[in-house]
Image 1 (tube, one colour):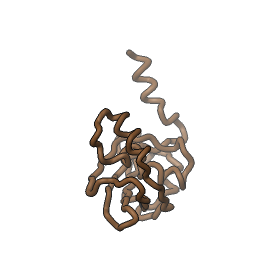
Image 2: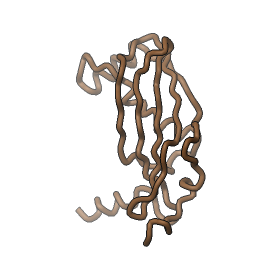
Image 3: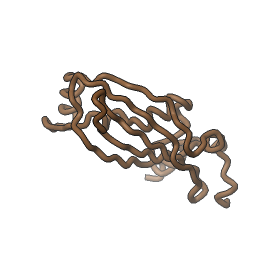
Image 4: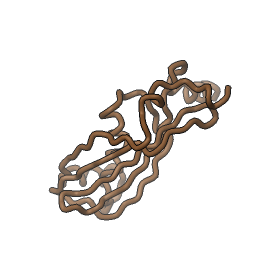
Amino acid sequence: MADEEVVSSILDEVTIGEKLDSFSYLVTQEMLDEYRAIVDNPRAAYPTVAGRHSLQAFTNRYTEGRVMNAGTDSEYYNEVLPGKRIFVEAKIIDKYVRRAKPYIIVESRAVDEDGRLIEISRLIAKAKQESKPLFGEIAEKWEQK
């Protein structure tokens, strides 16, 4: 099957440059403490990693279950401080087909209420194809083991 023949309704729905709905949340000391306990690092500074901002922004606009995280690239700038609100903006920065599989790239920027840049994150998302279950290939690989 040629790359051009891929059918994916979500790939047709998104537009490069499309801004997704922004959102915000308050970081609490409890959130920091729980994150640090989970990652077993008492000095871990970025509980936003667990927030997956790009994926959340995408699924806030488009129905969940239509993309699968195929990779994330994140850059961290300033420590997250308890008691500060984090504001997240995101947009679609690319979409393409590779090896007959559709992908969408979402970039998010998180800043705190003081305007400090916290992170820039890019999600590489494999998009669901109408004719195939999203996690079908993974299930097939596991069944072969």
